[in-house]
Amino acid sequence: MVRIYREQIFWLGVLILAIFLLILVREILFPFILGIFLTYLTLPTVKLLEKRKVPRSIAIALVYIGVGIVIWASAVFLIPLLVQDLNSLLLNLQVQTERLDGLARYLTLRYQRLNLPMPVRSSLDQGLQASRQFLQELITRAINLLIQLVSKGFYLILAPVIAYYLTRDIELIKKTVVQTFPLSWQGEILGIGREVNSALSGFVRGQLLICLFVGLGLTFGLFLLGVPYSLVIGLVAGITNIIPYFGPVVGALPAVLAAATISATHILYVLLLFVVVNQFEAVILAPLILEERVGLHPIIVIFAVLSGGALFGIIGTLIAVPIAAIIKVLFLYCRSKYAPIK
Image (tube, rainbow, N blue to C red; front, side, top):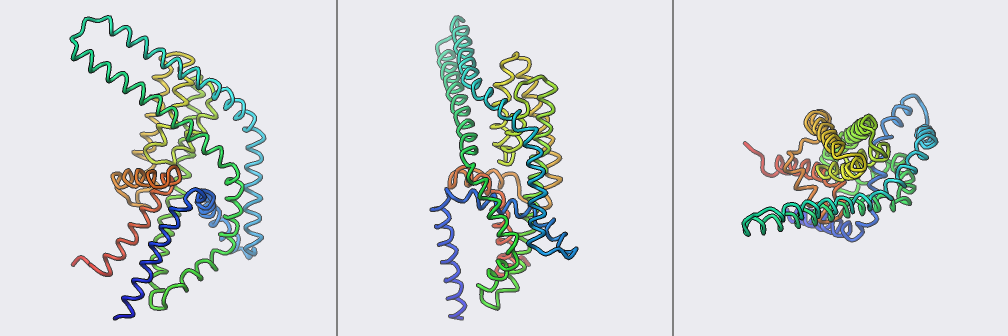
């Protein structure tokens, strides 16, 4: 009995130490998270090739060559358009921000000419000021988010390297991790690992499909509306959509600013497009793809995203839902083992 308690205390200490170390090195976690993401995407194809008697190293090389060809072909056609749109969009952001600020000032002057009671006027002044500050902060945060994503360029190169070693040595890593635990625990650790792997693989592949749908849908819709920079805006919206609940807001800001260069009617059309696409994704597509695989209530997802953002910033918002899924698996296991419901 004493030995069992010692083992539990030891592993609890290891867990606390691991969490503490992750918090300390949170700034360098991005390439590892992206590497794990890429591993989940490529591993099924690698295993399929292995079943056809292709050695693992060659299978990984073939998959990477295939992905590289797709990226190269896409880059040849898309990168010149993306660079052109991105340059124009960044130059236009400041102009449009000043236009929105000028519009807010104009509306403020117009309503001040109305003969309103002082309490009403004071409340409106406070509301307008708060709205302007909120808009400016939202735009600033969106631009900072984009800059941070672009600044991770080195990590984008490092991530495939990490993914290669994870994919090549996945069985060895799994065996090493399991053998780290006492022999009596190894069967249960394997069972928990299978459930965690199922939840994470379902989330990663499902989220990729959702982001692809959102990016393509918004790009096509913005192009039909005649909004400039539709390609880069659709790409940004698809990437930021991986951040639950808050990603669509970040993705919509560049589209609204681009639509403002045309007319106020186009702003309404763009907002309507984002609402339709994201509602379809949230109400139909995401539940269909993710609900059965992850199984988290929306309130838990919101809490997880806010907590992850508070602790780890952008990286925290990206890993919040997978971590919450892992915690759920561990909680259900512990409850069934130590506090079963009769």
